[in-house]
Image 1 (cartoon, rainbow, N blue to C red):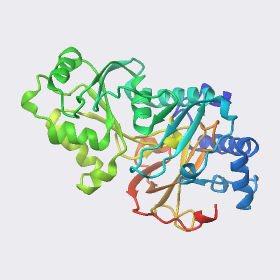
Image 2: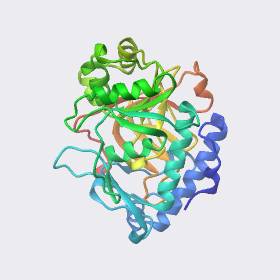
Image 3: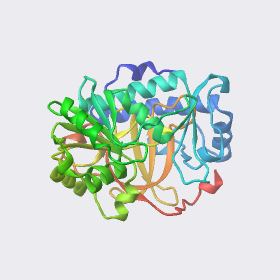
Length: 353
């Protein structure tokens, strides 16, 4: 089920008012589709006494993210599943399972491409990956980390992994890459804490033959570790600029449960922004929408999930919607910030779902 209304839509082509109308109409259709196609989703909606008549986006039912760890939620026959994504997690803990058919996998890839092209351009750039090479990856069962590396890799060429198998910086490989490509734009990808550990804490500038001034860094995840060492997003950028002359840095927020519809950070105001394919709401622990500007649990909505009912998910991440319109991105996006995750977070009411 590839939605024709989404196929030719740009990620930031609608103004905020038109986007609200378009998105609400599409998310209503998607909710009804999953209700008809997913027996588990139908049971959940029926059990919580929700109806399918929605007056506003806040009425769209959501699934607590932990349900994807407990149940196999599908909206297509299981024999049509092309790949299964699994979330990252602590060893021994259950992980989310996300089931993709070919249509859903294609729509996620196309949408991710549209969003990223807005900051990296249309050309495939030489790509430096701040990780070790994942040698053996199952095509049918993919971890969140492998899925992210694979997903972002399609936007680069001449893929080079900066770390060796011992997860140490391979200076020979790194310098060869920089000597070949650093005079023009090149793409850098990695997970927030791994990038920081290697490009700031461990790297020795004296061993580098070139700097990173033409690099475009896309990074996401791992902010809990950064919070533990009290490094904010702004400080993160300052330190990489000072050490490597790396100027173009884009943080993103995304979930394996909604792969493809990531939220990129605006380079001017440092807020995360929604696209035409996504939206966010903020709820308190009683599941009520919070007053404007207050912190609460982030609910993420996406028009992409079609093979599984992951279009409206209540996360365990804390965030707030930023209301001022001082930045131009406010004309087409909801702007928000993520404030981490509550340890052993308790969302009252979820036990009833």
